[in-house]
Amino acid sequence: MQVQTINVEIKKTLEILGVNLINDGTSTGSENFSNGEIIESISPVDGHLIAKVKSTSAADYEQVITTATEAFKIWRTVPAPKRGDIVRQFGNKLRQRKEALGKLVSYEMGKSYQEGLGEVQEMIDICDFAVGLSRQLHGLTMHSERPGHRMYEQYHPLGVVGVISAFNFPVAVWAWNVALAWVCGDVCVWKPSEKVPLCGVACQKIAAEVFAENNLPEGISSLINGDYKVGEFMSKDSRIPLISATGSIRMGKIVAKEVAGRLGKSLLELGGNNAIIVTPDADIKMTVVGAVFGAVGTAGQRCTSTRRLIIHESIYEKVKQALVDAYGQLRIGNPLDENNHVGPLIDKEAVNMYKAALNKVVEEGGSIIVQGGVLSGNDYQSGCYVKPAIAEAKPDFEIVQHETFAPILYLLKYSGDVENAIAIQNNVVQGLSSAIMTNNLREAERFLSVAGSDCGIANVNIGTSGAEIGGAFGGEKETGGGRESGSDAWKVYMRRQTNTINYTTELPLAQGIKFDL
Ligand code: UN1
Image (cartoon, rainbow, N blue to C red; front, side, top):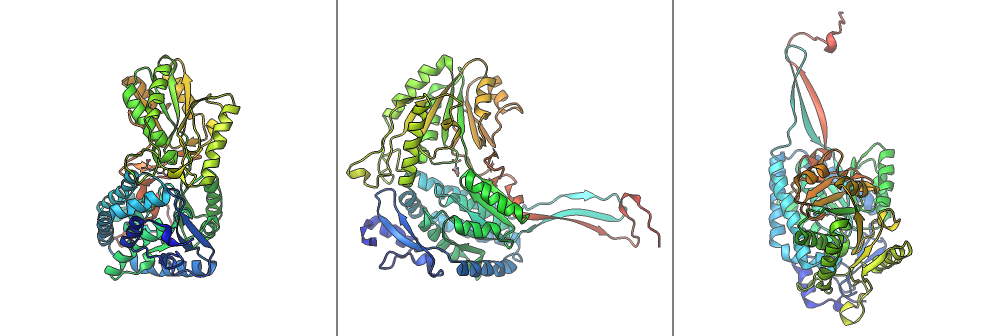
């Protein structure tokens, strides 16, 4: 297949981003890497081959790690606020290319153009956050128990940070990691998902431009391409002190085991099975907006997507009807057309998992109240467009325990107190995001209390997705326990050193131990 199949607008977008395609459709972003397997970037929007990218061979990988390790020696000596200034410049370039990068995200991954823009906005926001942070990498000062001694702690960079990211947020999650890691003085090696390699190439080009303009080595930011095998090299490599990985629980367990085996650090951002509890005091209109965006936004492919609605029996029928009406309004189609709400799934494998989940919920005794199905016809040539579906189910169905990356929403009924809903919500292995819809202060506070939601994110009167970068992002249990982006998530990218300085002429020992010579 040739690149000519891509429409002119997309070609122009790739040009703006510096992702130059040569005759056979190969992206020049991969020119540093030789003889690896070929990865094809196929748009789920129209099924066209956008480009081919070479995956990183073992020899290339060695080269990248060596280059990164050398770059670290330079980068760590640049004062943190100066590193912040580089991140500021990177953020400014993102501002200039927001539309182009947002469009590429939309075309290569399939999320709506609005969400593509939102993703680039998250990148810009985390850059701003990191710039301020670059002057606030604070450690504490402690009082020494010994006279004439001073004790304090300082944070130093770790070295090479490995970032493994998923297809669903092809650019933002990388930025959450690198913006912080860079101001902390780390260098980063990034393996984007093999399903969205061009987003990786485009981001690497922007970063490389900034480093070149500042006479800094490009090795501060490196890109490697490939599937799980490349991720495995990284996890096993003791030259990479921290691996930050976003993806499935299955992948996370492998990474965790490999990294722990060499006593490295990992930051894991894995699956969610997020619920909204809808109590008798909920505002139904708000509930519908939150639930529908949460369930069908990004075609249900966010780790924060709403998968379960736990509705009180007294308002169950009312909420159900409002949802059925709202789903009737949804427009499915090309995500670059802003009239559409829902774009395609990432690929046919995802479509099969969607179909299997719908079959399974029926098999287990559930009933589908908004029918799903795969769309066909001219507008849906890629075969990746599916109808968002709603199923009535029971909390203990096997399929309801499982994260299916697709627009399927399960309605579950609860009776009695909010504690019953919280118990249903917590009774899954994942612990990423959660929400309650209620105007009842007591219910809301119980949901947020120590006996409430067990998730990393717990919201009141908003949905489960769409977290802001200022808070720490991540979840508990099999979601992996990692925290990225805001708050003090930066600390994971640094090593802490405790320093005690004696400015007397004596050498007293701690704990009053006597050791006279
Ligand atoms: C993810 O799905 O991996 O909270 C990240 C959200 C986004 C990030 C999701 N800000 O939905």
